[in-house]
Image (cartoon, rainbow, N blue to C red; front, side, top):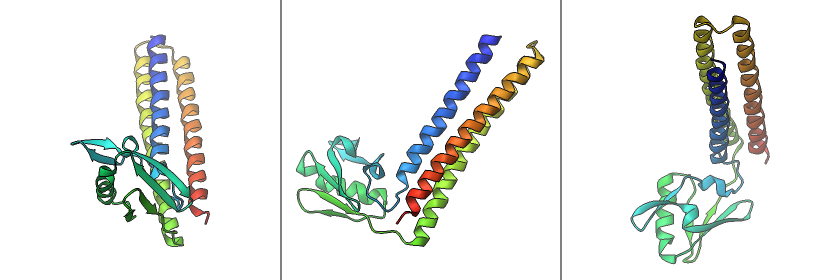
Length: 187
């Protein structure tokens, strides 16, 4: 019974880690007015008839703070890359010079920065909701184990451990959001 509880506890901690990973992925997609190759993560290009990640068909770099340069391995993919960027609706118009696709990141207005901060906070809250849902599953599991004969004081101790873990991960989420907010609001 103790092994089963420890296994469930480890799985809960793993799901908390996944929530943090997902939050980091989502925050990377929120642009802060600076050029970053991470803005193009998840962008798929139709390459030889199958969707392929952009990073596998081109070299992506940032020559300066406001420009992303995409140099394809094969020149014939330039139009496909442009099309993928348009379809992704990034709000950025690609410029194709026959060799490289350039994305010029426009400076953000104060209003747009505030909207981006709200998006980041919403993503953080979603992660916290996911963590709380896993906490409830674990607490329900512990209550069931106590009913089935697991010592009540040990069950309470495990509940306290789960709550401490939730508090740690909530603090991590708050820190990630704080860093992203500072990044977005920096002109």
